[in-house]
Structure formats: structure tokens, C-alpha cells
Image (tube, rainbow, N blue to C red; front, side, top):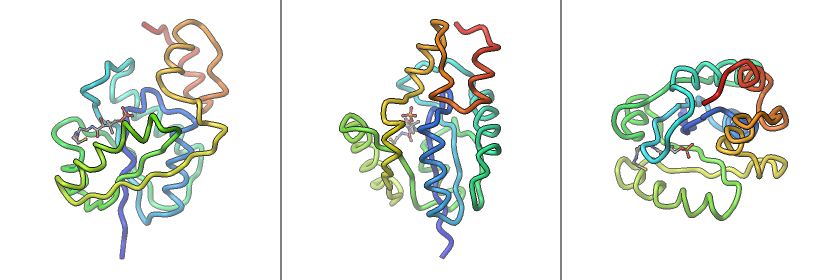
Length: 163
Ligand code: PNS
């Protein structure tokens, strides 16, 4: 059986924590789609196309095994994308109990909507404090974010005037 998994997220921008989860998913599933999704509950800093471009650079440099696709989805439900590509699994990283509380209702709703199961992976504890929001805040105030993001993102943030 060819199991297709989707790793969704805002990726605003992609962090080392995200890459950790993507790499683990790539080892487990036959095909992994990393999907930049518009989160209606968050105001994004970077346009979706830019987030996809940064993900593509980071994933290409990481040389993960297997079949990996990077794309975006901004119309309709995330499970509609899963149905379109034949994905039966969503993959999410869990850093703490806060993530469990945030993910639990989405997991149940996605299962009810389209029988898509969510698999939770525990990233390396070295990344448990890393989040895109922290990266945006530190970068926006002129701090060094290179310990938290891939080099391509650190270079992009250093060269970009942030709002
Ligand atoms: O990186 P994030 O912001 O925590 O990712 C959350 C995301 C984008 C995966 C989540 O908001 C989502 O799944 N949005 C798609 C909209 C949707 O399908 N909602 C209904 C089921 S939860």
C-alpha cells in the first residue's frame, strides 16, 4: 500500500522544528506532501508563495529520502487537499501539552470530515522551544535567528526589511 501523508502548516517561516518533523515523516511514509496552508486564525508575515519558496530551498538542502512535494492550499478545507491527492494521514509535530490542546480538536474534525487520521510526531527536544512566531519576533527586532531556522531562511530574513 502506498501511504501518502500531508504535513500542513503556516510555515511562516519554516523552522528547524518543522524540518525535523518533515524529515521524520519522509522516513515513515511513501510520499509526503508539505503543504503551506492559510490559517484563518493567524495574520501571516510572509506571502504564501514566499513561504513555499523558503520551504523548497530548506527541504532541497536537507536531502530527505523518498518522495517529497512542496505546495500550498488556500481554498477550502485541508482534507479536500488530502482527498485530491489520495492522502490518508496528516502529520503534526507536538512540542508540548499546549500543542496537544491545539491539535486535538482539529484532529477529530479532520477525521470526522474525511476519515483522515492525524499522526503526531515528537520532534527532537532541542527544537521544543522553536516556533515561527518566536522567529518572526526575534528577527523583527534585529536578533539572530540562525539557531532556529535553516541557513536559507536566516539569510533571507537578514536581507529582508521586516514589517
Ligand atoms: O502552522 P499552523 O498555523 O499551526 O497550521 C495550522 C493549519 C494551517 C494546519 C490549520 O489551521 C488548518 O488545518 N487549516 C486549514 C483549514 C481547515 O481545513 N480547517 C478545518 C479543520 S481543522
